[in-house]
Length: 266
Image (cartoon, rainbow, N blue to C red; front, side, top):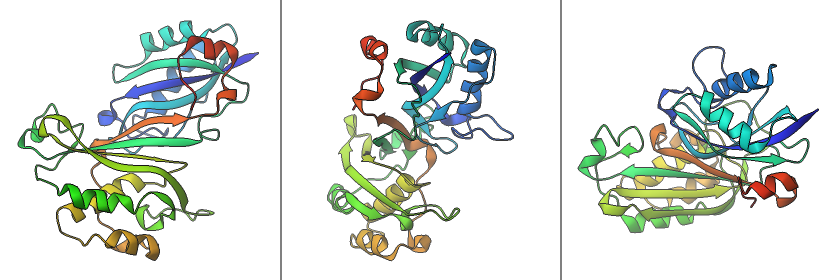
């Protein structure tokens, strides 16, 4: 018998090729599964709520997996943090209903993107964790560009060219910019039911060009209508992007998991 768990994971993506396991190279999924296999004495598949690119970070990636029923959430979290590498940390862990899947059951996902507009953004203590742009952005143009993003759209123009998909529609619940403290620059918050590959980075790259007056504001609407990514700005660098959280229905949390308060439902 086994139990289903949901772990809330933080990781520094600098040294990873992304979340998804690959034939060669270091990945977050590979590291997590290696430790889970050691604890379970068998292979354990971990499912992430989203796939992150190389260099992208997480402050709340939801990861699901099944473990032997002898494990409790508290004991499993302690064991994981004792064995995982230093650039991965389990912030919280909850028991879930049988069959829970972090990707399939997520109602929404939230990302943020940090841009450094001050000279100190080039510091080695910052440049791995934000886009060290080092230039001022027009706040009015940023907000006007973001206003086009909210709602349900076909985001084909803001996605990488990969294999064909059944559809490219995403329902964006929130898309807004806020100023970072101490004049450091800007932070973009976006939440949607789903995201396409490179979607957030391509949105940020295009909105940044608009805020630098390199593109007209109406380009956002034109690109969404065109559904063609050949005229979209290059994607923003990966190091400024963070997976923040995924939301799940409350009834997917088991009574035991809810009592721990480890991972809050939506």
